Image (cartoon, rainbow, N blue to C red; front, top):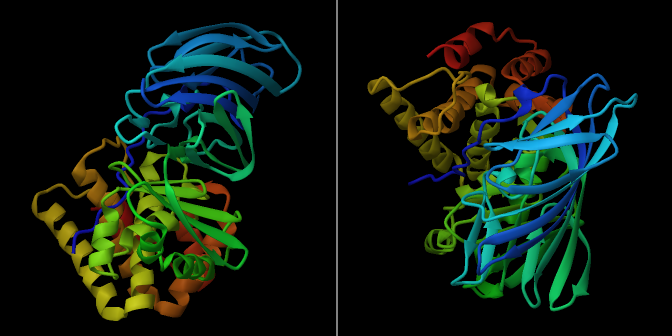
Length: 425
């Protein structure tokens, strides 16, 4: 079995360039993508808090062309490579609002497919929206997207309305809960659509190639997976819809939606147990989007959890043999890292986007969670996972937070285990 996980490669954050902690509270973006030209035009309002003593802030802006930055406290601005530097005038309040007008032809972060009339975001939010790309800076999002009439638009949050704007349609999406900026996104296209319902949550499935009937077969387990993660985390899914879009060549989770490779359906239709990627991306709605590593040193807390929870669902749905097969694969990947001297501790600095680094945080990490389950026993392990998830839902975490939550829940000293399997190689 080949396991392919979301290959998101985070970029460097501008967070460390800010003299005082920057807390963005809300982004309000109106954006008009041109699929044929691979071009975007945007107007962005950013509400943020920063100490009144701060003389400037730094935001991430990719290769966007920033034309104007205005606001009561804006003194000047400049763009230096992928950073937007904004000088602030004297003030007494920490609350600020700025308006940024920009455009550009994103080279990554926003994928345009003119041949199919589709577009979707993936990986780098600051390539299509000026943002503060810090894992621990969480904000809400108001996203207004102008698209050609007749096309569908799926985005982070909940759809609150649509309207006509000349020959275009304006889709208004609102995410009222706060997440890091990398979780924001959208997809556009001439999609076929299907839906299911689990409790009060609507499950939406989209593809330009497959019929609604086939889409239901591909994603038939989504409701069961969602309920399984709710039970294991002790936390209800945070909004009233979840969408999955078969599009392009990527796998990526975003708030309230995921994009999956357009060819993914063929493997599921061939073998109904090959749903690891459905589970993996949905798991990120808890572990990753809402319980987020504070920085890339602790990236395994995002990805290993998604890998492992997908295998835990496999055990629940298909039996222990399926689970053991998954774990054997993860161990073989870990053993290969050791044999080639490419192993690293799960907590390490200097993240670089390499296959070996991904194998450490994804698969070695998932194997270590399996070993922790063996160490504690099923009941204690799952009680600890639930306690950790409930305590840190909506927050950013480091590995010590996970260790202490597991120790507190189980009454077990895990120093030796974490030293051997997490902090040492």
